[in-house]
Image 1 (cartoon, one colour):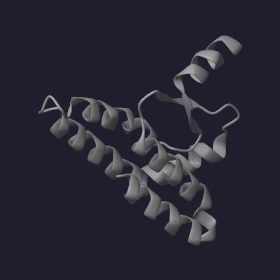
Image 2 (cartoon, one colour):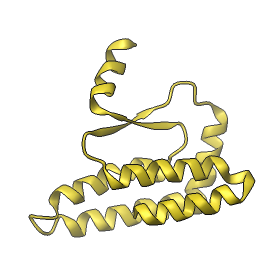
Image 3 (tube, helix red, strand yellow):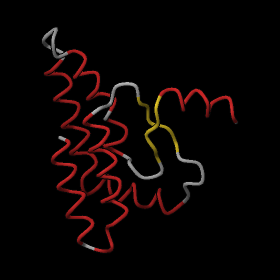
Length: 117
């Protein structure tokens, strides 16, 4: 999945107008490679443009990616060895559906942000 996200990121960055989607794809590729110890949080200051971008993303690719992560997560959870990877796929569901206006942080940083507000 990470390679697919990286390839999509390169394609989106080549097409100049879709660079924000390319950067989101690179973020998701990084998260797909190592989701353990990291969490998805809302980015402060994300506004209407990220919402509009997320709507376009859902229509074009988001629901396919979310469905792929859901099916892969269920199949991985059928074996004992695959359960941690299945849970990691379930963690990727929200970011694959709506990637703009989100950021991926270490769990330590997430705790810090919760108390900083």
